[in-house]
Image 1 (cartoon, helix red, strand yellow):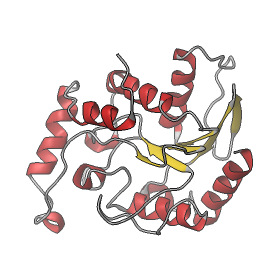
Image 2 (image 1 turned 180 degrees about the vertical axis):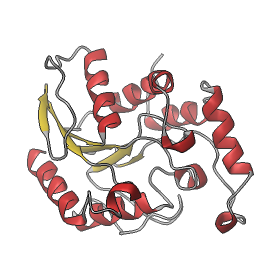
Image 3 (image 1 turned 30 degrees about the vertical axis):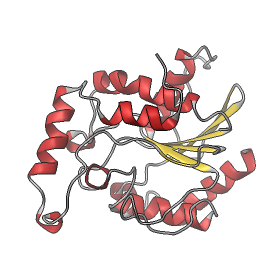
Length: 226
């Protein structure tokens, strides 16, 4: 039975223990803290989406960071990936501030909402296919509760595939062969657009594979499509 509201879905989501490997990892990380966060109380649970329920732009990431969202309880919050993402959303007029450090830091989004296909921090940032599949119904239900979304921005290949899988599961037509992920690529999925961007991970942003200018351009394209 589908949740009737985002708060009810989030309450169900944060109680999930469906993936034993992910449960063990997220809780181990929360218990055996790294030195720089020794005094922090870790969230250590699945992480729900965050943003404007009336959003026209949906940003789809990968999974919570072990010491980012798994620590703070808010997606893309408390790590370098989030620093890059929220600074860009702020420049685009979608975020009230350029930083995201904690659930109670006052940040709000206008016109944008952020989710991940996998809701628990995975070891080495690599969820298994069965874990992505097991978590898919949360993405499906959350997207159903965001009826105004017109553009889905997929951060990386796993997010891109997750959105295409979601579209197929919910009765949509997906081109054959399936369009592969590429930065700044866009395809039309019914009444929505799917837009791709390299993930905002440090691996991409610190090597120059993804620059602030490149990501700003993708957000501008998303704005035009909405």
